[in-house]
Length: 323
Image 1 (cartoon, rainbow, N blue to C red):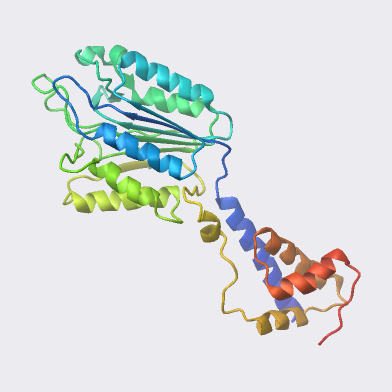
Image 2: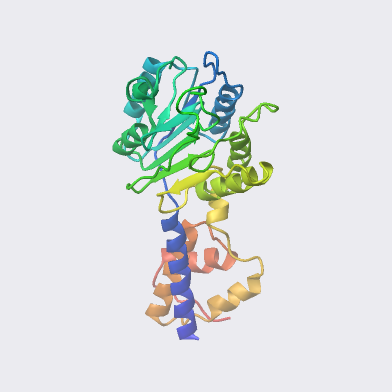
């Protein structure tokens, strides 16, 4: 019985520590949300709607600071991104969402401001390189960095030599803590979904983010599956996962990540467990108390744990009579 008790206590402690170690904790949750749609001669219907919906959702999820901007020109895009990065402190979570036109050139992705009228050679000067945005986020000290690009809707250079180039190119990172999501796979075009109020990718992303108990990776996997099915397998969102651990958007995370004891464990079973402790053996009592302290810290407070072990915790020399 003593060996079984020791094993049970050690397993309980190890399980609780593993669960506690998996979850990512952040300080402030900051977001920059940009929707560009008012392109002269090549307007997009949904980016502004998408940005507004994402901003509302993030505020509802408890983000501390959500900056929403729409129809930014080149100067404004650079200013807003720099201001946002300057507000990030070490340990924060930084979320950047961009909806609008995006293009690739020379294996590099660019976010297009609404006043861009140049050629491919002007992209480095008059558009915003997506990898530059990623690099700024990674240098900011944020614990978790989420970059979302719904920027592959169609080619804004129709009629030019870029007609054969579609969507964005592969994008990743070498730094832990970066998560990148793109509305569709490399060299593919995302659906603007003009018959509805939001783009196809953002529509399903919003549904996933507001699902209780879903973590970062699960939310984007569900989005990927939903978009792929809704587009009749034409649009397959791409994600790059450089995050070690779990991050939950919805408040029920504590319940999901740290489940209480099984409801099958009756009061009689708990009492039997306590009665199996050798009250005269210091090692057995210490292991029991170690498990109890961990249980209290994780919210697992059953009747016997609270009454018996609690009194032992307050008075370690107390010896309980057997029932």
